[in-house]
Length: 210
View 1 (cartoon, rainbow, N blue to C red):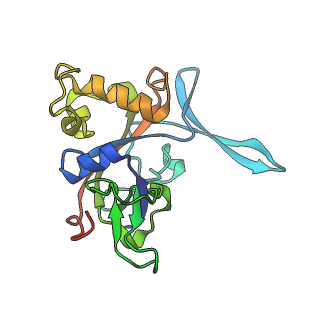
View 2: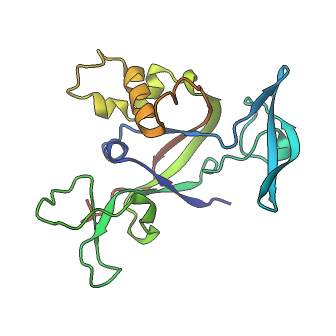
């Protein structure tokens, strides 16, 4: 059975989705596996009386397909499995404030200099106005530093590098800068475990909502 889940993207990544250059996204695994001795483990917790208590520990094997149960040594990917859909949340506003089913206008690809209404946060975008739907094609687990040049291009850096000479053709250098802007200074050096989610567009962009 396939499901749908929301996913947030920044303005630059929405542009890359729209032009077709972004077909991957990396999301930090939560909680992070921990190295204990020579083995990586998941340490599960539960909340009781306002405090977090360890419940159990499971072996972590990043080579296993991450679609089964926790007892299969790898947590299921919270974004879904191949065949599942992701509906994209992006910065937006209602075209008319009179009724909440009015057509929406999106920040990306919009010339709206005369409209003084602030853009609404992507996290508040309802499913009913979604214009970009993605279908997951593959999920894997790796350390952040495992990204290749081809992966960085598939992360949307190809779109961002057009007309940019600063990175001398190295998409991974640009990806590092983008990652640190999104996750904070020093976040690249931590080299966290990440979900690598590959996808394709499930439907074309909705007409009249660009």
